[in-house]
Amino acid sequence: MLEHTLDKSGNMVTLILKGRIDGLTAPKLELLLNTCIMQGDRQLIVDMKEINYVSSLGLRVLLKIQKVLKKVDGELIIKEPSEIVLSVLQLSAFDKIFTIYGTVNPTTETITTEKEIEYRKNVRIETLTRSKEKGVLISIGNMKKMKEEGYTETDVVEMEAEKTRFGLAIAALGNNYKEFNHLFGEALIVEHSALVYPAVEKSAVDIILAQDDNQKSVYNFFSGLCFNGEFSHIFKLESEGNIPLTDLIQFIREKSPSEYTGIVMLAESKGFWGINLKKVPLSENNPSEMFDEKKIIDWLTFPIEPEFYNNLLLGVGIIAAKKTDQDENIPHSHHIHAAILDDRIINKNPEHFEQEILRHITETEIRKIQHVLDDTVLGTVLCGIVPLGEMEIFRNN
Image 1 (cartoon, one colour):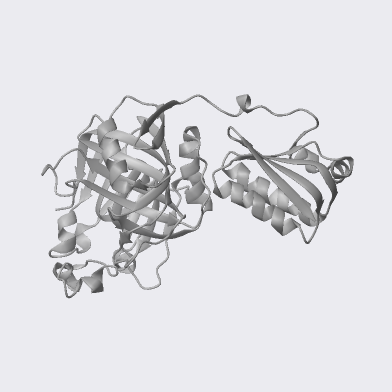
Image 2 (cartoon, rainbow, N blue to C red; image 1 turned 180 degrees about the vertical axis):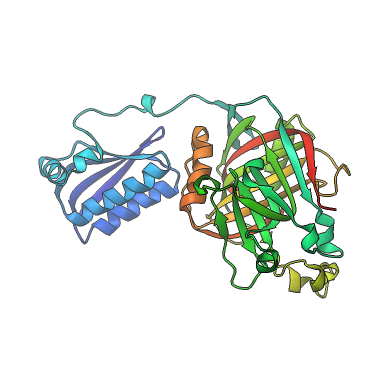
């Protein structure tokens, strides 16, 4: 039998256990700890002074939870283990893996950090201020052709990975046009790496990790909006309720001094609405009929209800301060693509935002990439913004 009590103080949660942890009770312990993680807790203390037995299955649960927490800058701490438990931990060398406190209570002072905080509409916002330099907006190809005459080989714009830090696009990976022309689809550029969701049946996300590529990667664009530069601000937005995407966009407009702003976000989905291409807008496919009300279903996926509750979203986009005709690729309001991640755990420390982005593109399975619709609703949001100044244009014709 395993009894438990939960005690929450500040950003620390203590799970006080009594009884034994064996094959029958280990699943209960795992459920308790996972519930804390899903609620956003990252510093978990397990009080084991009244545990009189722990089996290898119990140790396995503790190790599994520790690995999950370490990925998001968290930790499972063992407090006041009984003599029997301490002996088992030492024999299995788990005392080298876990922080173990005897009768000393850990304080939150070494874990928490001070941040600038404000509140808007019951949303708590933490802000880190970084670079004051404006970034560069990069317009690639011609987006209008997607819904008019369509694309041909002459429309492909090749870009080296090192030239684009972040972006969203209709793109493909490969070296031979005849081999990749049917593999264009919604794409993200994230820290110079490319993530592409080809517009084919039973599609899967294809990835090139720039940091693992010994050669200079080259990406093939029909159209895209990319940007370079450092984040001027990194925000964490949390609410007891949900955060509409449109509220986030308006918040970014208010915070950015630029006409255009690049945004990168990691967010919890509380109801995702997105669309993606079903086939590539090549000229031979006659994409001019894409928005014909009778044929649009042949071209685009349309959700009938919100999807991917509690999955994480990795999004990249451009937000315009006002309607403009400066460039045909520039959105009148905003344009965001998001990767739906097969993960529900996020490191909520804004200081680790960039590391968290890299962790997800290298470790997390990605279900698909879609154009994000305005009805999308979010939970906790981590986002970085790059106010943009100079614009570069790359086109073949």
